[in-house]
Image (cartoon, rainbow, N blue to C red):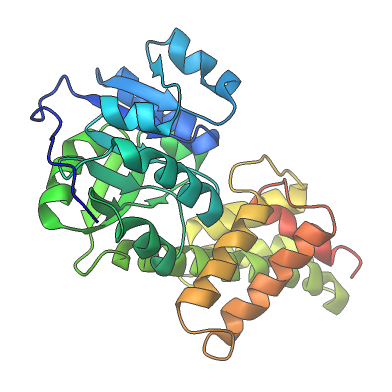
Length: 294
């Protein structure tokens, strides 16, 4: 590919940071950047979602190419691989080898490389651990891999949203670890959901069982808390079941296939069933509803 030799201006604290994709996470990340004193330009396929950020001081880009021509550092925070590929493809004509391009979406390592390899820009994959409360509080953890210099340039920018952990390895390593983290979490949530609904069949009060498990080192505090929400059937939408199913599917695909990851594949099937039965828009622990009277 012929390289565009015109570089954006050198980085300083006044550089405009571009954010493409303004779902629940993208909006909060952009807001944290604004609150941290950064100049921010945003783009979303439906521009109405950007209005609150524009009111807070962001500039709205006409399209991804316009955003790329104005911003040396770009963060993309979209829903899935197809959305991410479309955004980066549209941005590419405005990008140069001076750009740092961060894929914050949770994709697969292959999808990350498919986006990055044809580009003139320096790509980093920096998916996040955390959900909307952590995004609002600036407590996300970005798992970043890619060119070390590009990762270093991202660090002060992503410091507004949380911390950046540099994952040693080639581009895509951070994404692989993020998929493993989400898969591990998803397996645990599915397990506690079915077990809490199984205990009463054996004559054990589910709340008593959860209280005991919460005291044991085998149970992470987050899992115990989600178990309590399951018993109360409180399911605020933070990490919806449909996105869990997407990430679990990506994990199975990227980390060896169903035959190599049988527990993850079974949990993935549970979340897919949650989507198919109309529970896709509720938080991850809402998967417990599949086991009510099952």
